[in-house]
Length: 71
Image (cartoon, rainbow, N blue to C red; front, side, top):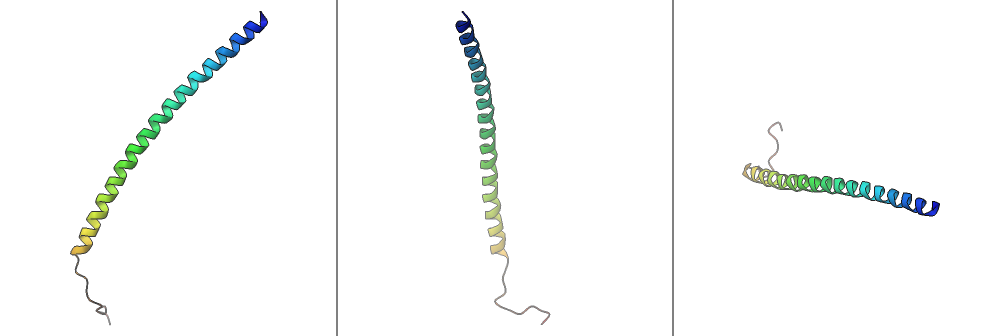
């Protein structure tokens, strides 16, 4: 009978561990999903800002190798 009781306790312990691991995996999955959503939004924002910067830089006239006015 003690073998059966020990086996039951081991099964209970394994079920408890499995439930904890399932909860941990679900929490990690949600965290990773949220992070990827934020990374995607930041990447799109970075691309938009880079395009705006390039557009602004292209509108600024550049002097053709003229020395600065203080020379």
